[in-house]
Length: 65
Image (tube, rainbow, N blue to C red; front, side, top):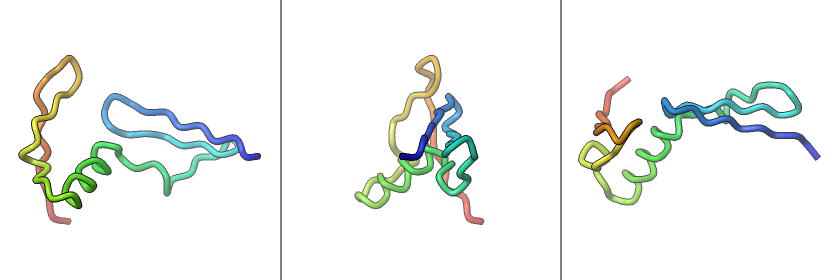
């Protein structure tokens, strides 16, 4: 069985290790993943009332790449 370790950071990022090696394809921002899922379900992510660290208000904005 493989040893997989995931570390979540307060800034919304995470780091994933499998057998001691980083797995970049699994290191996605959980904030962005949440926004994508909310949009799939018909919500407008920038309109969601979100709280950040220390209960501070936080807003998502959509950008085009």
